Length: 395
Ligand code: FEO
Image 1 (tube, rainbow, N blue to C red):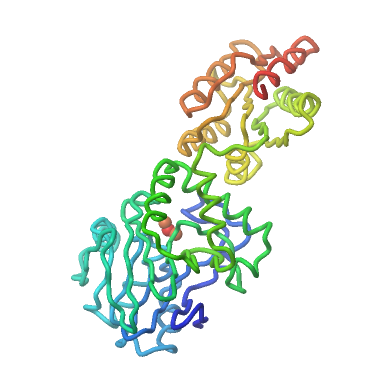
Image 2: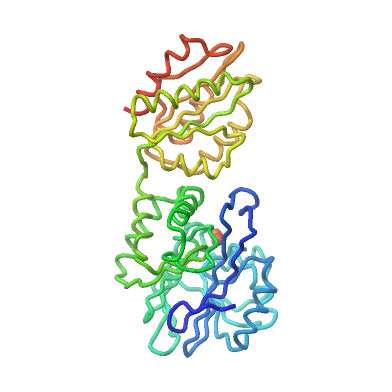
């Protein structure tokens, strides 16, 4: 059902309370999500984005209850990813020929996903405008690589709404719609998780784009993203958070991530946690077995950390597959300005610590020399190297 946002602008999306994962199973959903689409009914009727393909028929059915679909003058496709474009096929079966405003890259991504269907694309670029009547217009801002080449935001004058698509979003189901109605703790937890796991690799572009948008001098009363809560109370708070997150973000935190076979490496991990709390009581310490913990939650904690310690025993002249997979994801996220140390047990060949250090360095971490490498289970003399490792990480 449509829900009024401001003036003649309504939300017509889908709240996905049951969603458990996103991007296949690559992103865990803990508190539901939503695909936000918006309907603008000025002199022109404009649909901004749609919903994920599994909900396409329900979306079109609901929209038909609100308006005659033939009254839709145009569709804005801010982003071609299927969670926002997934209802276009069903919708355009009913209203073929409706103009779709999108970037040139979105034409590629939409035709690549749905094949060439003769859709009526109107390619736009940053600064292009569309008059929607009643003295209002839409201004388009390309958001290239935030997070796809096709991404775009649309600003509506008069009501001063920024339809930001994925930027400033959260995978968070909020029936009450707005940031000021949402549980603040969960809202920011989901916003930072979204940034750390999806947008962080593009942080240099985020910083530049925020400056570019600020230079446009557009008053922003509402930021309406394509997932989660709509920012209407102090909407610039999330822009300020993004500016901080894009700037090699860190808090006073140490995250320890490991897996273990017979508890030896786990013992070192816990000793590092105890020692960090002793050496630096103000530092937040988090510890995860990466084979058991949710990887997106762990990466969010890494994002907040100034240093990490990663452990694996040696197995098959290498490291445990759980840690190897975790390190591959760590590398993708391109964290900056963080230190790292390695630790682990071994029985005979003992390559794990060397491999961990190489992989952490490849992932962009400043790897400290100190390490804890223990043959068989850690003895007192092995654990005696923990204070030096912690000191190097937290210095
Ligand atoms: Fe929410 Fe990049 O799609």
